[in-house]
Length: 372
Image (tube, rainbow, N blue to C red; front, side, top):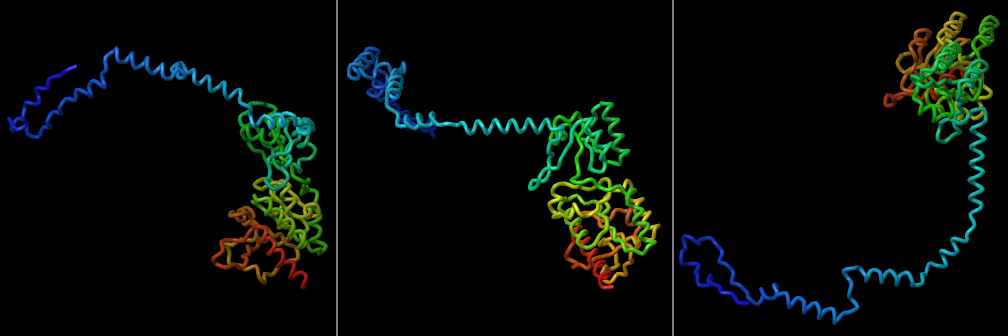
């Protein structure tokens, strides 16, 4: 194959104005062109020579070599054959028995009066929850003071749930509307209602108030503690423990706005929960008003006051109230207080823990009374 290159006769400098700034055309390499563009006969001849020299590589395009590699790997003895055989001969009977026992346990727990553990503290036993319309109705009729609060399905449209909600309000039990997923997390089945239980049944104010009214007439000293707005169960448990240790005769709790008597409360109280009398008046404001009219000294603990706890002149019959975390005393208690006391504190500190504040107040009262 030949080629005539006429461009080689054209000089770059023949027309400097027309070719200025351009690159000269490269010369043609005939030998290279023949190598890169062989004729059809040479291609066929090269392919025949290649197949004759390497017959074992025929069929690469049809992936025959892959099939050969696969057959070689399949027939090759595996070094893991003994391990696979030993693994297949192992006995997993104990694991299957454990799974069967766990399934049976879950079935027994689900059918036990529709009572299942509810979501509670991560480091303590969960709070007991009761689900079902009939079950919650029976609790509200027989043991309303052991029910902390009742959760109802939001916008259920069930008239039975509406009647049950009115029953809970008549029993002065706090009610709350929640999503169905929250109910399912506490107890299943629940039929749209779940009751969260206290660890012990609280006292009715109407059953014990005459005891404290008569103590004012007989001169018997009485100390009543009031805890409000406490949401941390460990804080409430510490309040119960300090109240028992420092001579509190009864602890009053509001009907709502508090954590319940959960297993964490019982654990933190270290046994004091069973020994201390705890009462949940239907109307805490009214109960404190009755004690005030009976001659009790109503005192509150709060940082927003100028009256110091140290050296305060306590009466023989005292009601000492403390507020919750970052909330303080509620207004309905503060307005009935004869004095609001401040515990000495460094200005750098924000406030005392509720259980610590109650403990300091109770200690100051007990110290002066024991000294007298």
